Length: 417
Ligand SMILES: NC(=O)c1ccc[n+]([C@@H]2O[C@H](COP(=O)([O-])OP(=O)(O)OC[C@H]3O[C@@H](n4cnc5c(N)ncnc54)[C@H](O)[C@@H]3O)[C@@H](O)[C@H]2O)c1
View 1 (cartoon, rainbow, N blue to C red):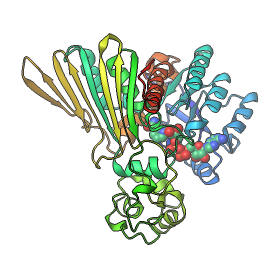
View 2 (view 1 turned 90 degrees about the vertical axis):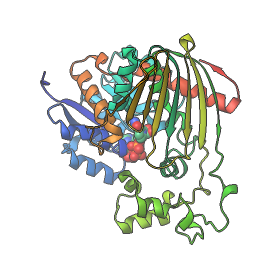
View 3 (view 1 turned 180 degrees about the vertical axis):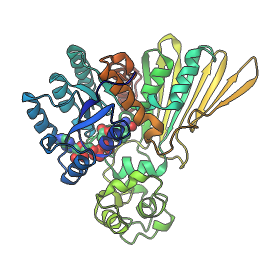
View 4 (view 1 turned 30 degrees about the vertical axis):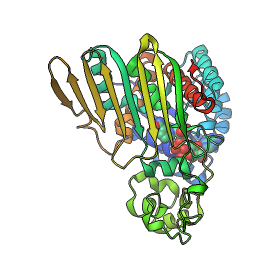
């Protein structure tokens, strides 16, 4: 059934994610209208306001200003909170208390206490509160979940899951970029792998009881800097041409992803070169202020004795991604790079499925960005939280798994949740 009128959305943070997710309104103007924006960066704010044709009285310099405005007038049905990791709780709780439905970027918050507080507040205010666990909304993981729930591979005994971050993506986000230092953002296992914990919890369908983890920052540190390297790739480094992590190669030559251009508001060849010469993304990967682990493994035990292992690593090639192998009592399912293979034991028969066949390769997160927006908009428009899969309650469980994994990695102990 067609929506009566578009859901009105206020966007908090017009950075990468604010833009990616808001694109839904351009594709489906009858379902969603971006009514306001809060963003301190002038260039981003003005570009966003122009792109979505926002009335200037609803263009704010900060979430605090837009919240103050909402004291007198609730300007939207919902708020999308797409600020950085450590700036989620303030706007999410503020707008929730003003009666807004909330869609919040992951990680929900950077401490277990904040996550629990946020969940309890959301329950008290009875609003729709979703977390952007975009993997749940991809055709790939939806199909895996559907197959597992159909019982085709019997009961799950164990799952092996890998997040291959890819060497250049890791260098961008977790060595040079926003998520390099847990004191500024959050640990790798929370920041990157709350998605993986969420997918494991969702597929297994049972609560996680115990977690053990190992891992460290092994490679990207000063003592491993090769002889002849300099503090910047543009500073006359002698090994730059041979280094896979060279910023010149990643940003100026190979450009393996479009969003790498976001390192500057002026992504011309000259602007990009300047960003590397002066900004954080031109730094040598062995000379940054990073502290997050570059590889980590997690062992998990769920209710009913089901187990899972998760590996995340920087040291993975381009063209890889997430791989999930689910071992059941009647068969085995492997999802790898968008394709699924189901192998039923007694029939000795392999079935190959390609759920991503009709998904636009340019769509963010394999269709997950538009998927989460679709379900959130539907849930708000029908005031029915059951239409949204990644609820705050589901997300709290997966975040607690990630916090337990980090605690185990640091203390060397098995953590009971
Ligand atoms: N779901 C996913 O798969 C996924 C992918 C990438 C990032 N993320 C998460 O999304 C969030 C945003 O990431 P990003 O890459 O868009 O970051 P970003 O830095 O590009 O955007 C954040 C924006 O918030 C703005 N901001 C700062 N203070 C503000 C204030 N007081 N009021 C309003 N806006 C303010 C910043 O100026 C910036 O433009 C992060 O928490 C990140 O971890 C999620």
